[in-house]
Length: 426
Image (cartoon, rainbow, N blue to C red):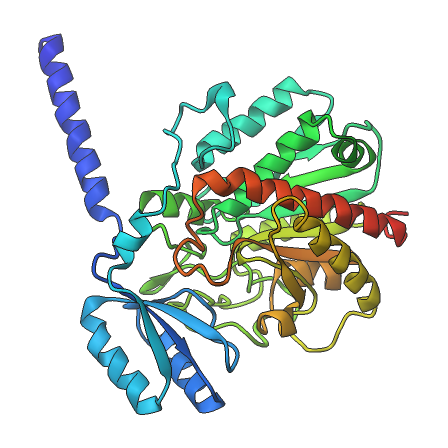
């Protein structure tokens, strides 16, 4: 066969593959976005039953607390049934978008072309998993005595959970563990994590240099690699792992940690986005990552988890209203951190203990780190945008990656300083 024919057939094969891939992508054309609010326990129970009974409604918020807004993306054929149900239960609701796909398409996320990042890795665009992994591998080569590539675990589909250890002191220093991307659709979280990695290695600002030189950093940008890849290849709004459970897939990896697992704020339905899994650490991702963190016991004094969205800073606990025994210290660090996050762009954060500030949620990584690993300071950031952003929440425009990451780093500088004042790094 001639070279031209080979090229022609190769091109046709590629186009066919692309066509199939695009055809298989989940789209939300003519799906409607509703916001509902349960004003009592009976109405809340209706929404909880709805969440676990159908895969034609995507819940963007957890159904956990009376009075909290719950956003739902509803398939066209399901709209009449939903409205009838909400009407019978007298649940107040509001239509926020008649075409969820069109509304999402209006957000410019700007994803880098796969495989072309090279030395041009930057924070003007989002990246796929492989490019970020290649970038971290390049850092280990560029800074051989400072950066160590670490494997935090493995995934159901056989991927590695990669990260970096940054140690400019070349000696044992107090440790800070930063985990991001445990919820796959929250793209700003891993982007911000890689921004922090870069700043720790390259910044000339005295406050950031102090962070890099006086602490050992362990940073895992993608704690849920399978889910993240799925958001790029199949369904942008995917949240969970990809473990198969009969007709549904995945568990919520931030409800799967073995500390008061599944006591509250999680679902027993495998089709739910907050499915806790069949048991604590049922997911290989959380099991293997927890084993890696446990291997560092005594070396980590501050644990930070990055999520999106709503502009919250949260601390334990999620399973109970009871507060940590060092809650006064948590409050002091919290106040300093949210004050710092607003200085650059006037971005307002709020928060507090997880249970009261947002909703009950057992089985989260920060609670596990605090409750089982003697990490006495553990925080979760919910990054930009605010809770009022009903679509751009999980699809933050690429133009906001740098501002969101800058203000986060400002906050972490203040957080570390306050934790140090309180003596937790000694």
